Image 1 (cartoon, rainbow, N blue to C red):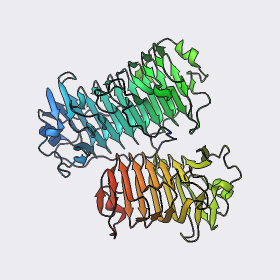
Image 2: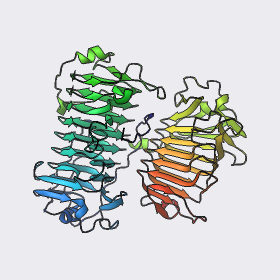
Image 3: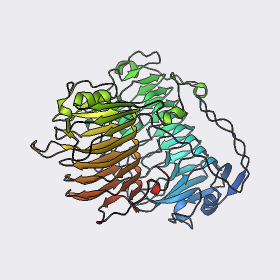
Image 4: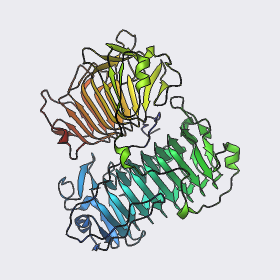
Length: 601
């Protein structure tokens, strides 16, 4: 097997916060825009200003707010731009180091429409295999239509996708052809109202669509085919999850042909509200490679399926996959009336196309209301001295003062039980791990690193794990595993999955934890004046993370006294920006303000 596996015990991710950032002044008179998209995702008005381009340099020069860029026939190879690799070249775009080249990122633009001449005659391509073809950061009202996008033919397999959206809103992809070797056709995180219509995704190696912490994602009247195959390795390859939503609020696949794909899981929903499949055809797919995955892998709320056929699929694993490490929905799939459906019922279903244009979710889509950006009202303040008191105090808009010298979570009365509203216990081989889930604005404050310790006894457990949380503050304490317990550790000290806006200050994080800080799919962290020591691997291990600042920190007596970075963007060690790979800082740390990142945390 040639493919590198990522961690498959993907845990809960729920909706986090979106900051809609509009563009700033330009030399083109802005057109009027309608109100923001409502529950059915209405578009705003097409800008009046139109710029026609025929070269890649003209395309880049034209990028800005409130305009339509019309691309004439031809191939626009971003790697051939005269500014390629110049990180300060554009006002509304920049190049990001992607290891084997540079990736174009459009940023802080509102009202930009990219219109190709024709999907058969107009394409945007890039050569680096680790770069996304087109990426957008903090854009609003972004339209991409009538073009093809993918990587140029070349050696090696891709680690970059085709279209990637981070912290964007009102994204429309229409009449496009998105192809591999890109890992995914569309990826999105922390974004609002991402809708693709009449679009084909094919020959991508990891899957078709993957979304994290998004609201209102739809793939409508499209085609997904032949994903999960490698041009180099053929069938000795497979996608992870073809259609994957982590912690989203509204994810719909409507009237779509899904055929001839090779994947571990066809539909994976992790703590997503409103994962809907309607009017689709799932035909001739190979599912459940190497006994992992299945047709459905559902954690949290069930997936709703209606009018969808399942024909000619080859399952080498179970139809419904259950992960022992992740709480799985008791009824993974329901019909539109909320009644549970088994494999027989699903495979007996016939295809009935739905009215996608008038489709509405069966719940209220809140579209990131202002009050969600910060918990309102006075915070609940608790002073705790036991594990039970600590657990009872976990919640949004809360401050927990730890007044005891030691809290060992294994002493909790419900240790290993069902947990509570805002936390659960996850079985990790040698004992339960405490997972705090979906809270916002929670502060945990000790009496000082020499007076307060948070402790885990199981060696495979993280001391504290946070899933889908935002506004987390941890300060003035020490955390680590019970030193006297036998064996080496397999758990981190602090682990974050799908989290945002986190500050760790004045702490001591010690081994035998594998990493002092582990994080995946997370962003906007400040770690300051914190000592990480005696960990068996790295001070911090970050995967698919962005905008982290390590300020006045020290890492010592670890296997590697530094950071392990994979798929990261804008990571600062004091004033130094660091890139993917292993980074071991030199002795001596300068001081940097909170706003040392390219954008404020």
